[in-house]
Length: 201
Image (cartoon, rainbow, N blue to C red):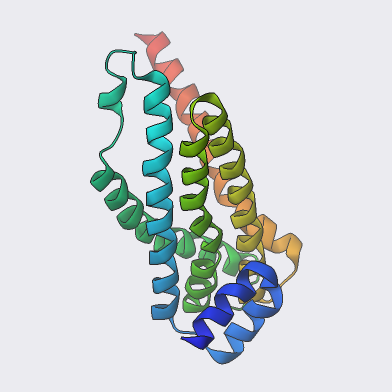
């Protein structure tokens, strides 16, 4: 338990050295899964609270409430999809990192990327602050602070990739960016092909 707390605080405040130490100590995937679970639960709680803010703002619009998830659905989606995305994204980034000359193992990527989700534990307090502020102020707080957390997670992702695969920060950034670039290019090609096919009808 002490080691887990040490790794949690280290990830939040001195991630690079903590990630290196975790690799040396061979922190288990099970421990990382516990961290992901905690982050997902907090993220789900934050989502539930944030939804309440938006529902209070747009309650008068017909059908808006039906677009929102129930609290149980929000929590389930957060946990289930959180775990799926953790494994899938780690797998994709691991393959890209290997192509770029990375030397790490998949389990090392899983562990470090699992801990990289830690800033999401602050989603719950952000949701609480947003709902206490209420209205437009609460919505801006949720969006603004949520954006900051997303950037924080991305920075930790870069450090996790760099440490797991033992290469430069530049290659770590490339590893993170390349899959998105490929998706954008594929989407653009599909749109062009779709427009061409429609014009042929």
